[in-house]
Amino acid sequence: MKTAIQGNKRTQTVPVILKGGLMARVNPQDIPDNKWDHHHGVTANGQKVNSLKTTKIDDTILIQNGSGGPTFSTTMGEFEVAAVQILAGIGYDVKAPGH
Image (cartoon, rainbow, N blue to C red):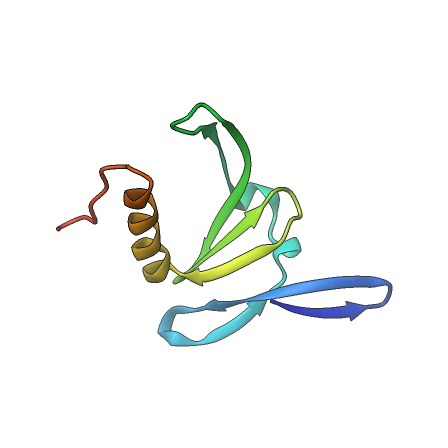
């Protein structure tokens, strides 16, 4: 994540990989709220969770902790592998499609 100052405002941009492998930078604050998926629910041990948002831009997923919180970006492939491994590591029976 890079930080820039525009006037009195501090903005943070994250890298995204576009189709064809081109890289660009996006300010997550410029993405309209209706373009984010809001993740709410209850964990396996009963903890209520209401603070994660995600959105996809071409081959990149952006993950934001809470409204306006820090944003992380990674490729969909990297996220897919990590998600399966993380969920399996905490006891979920998860397999990647086709495996």
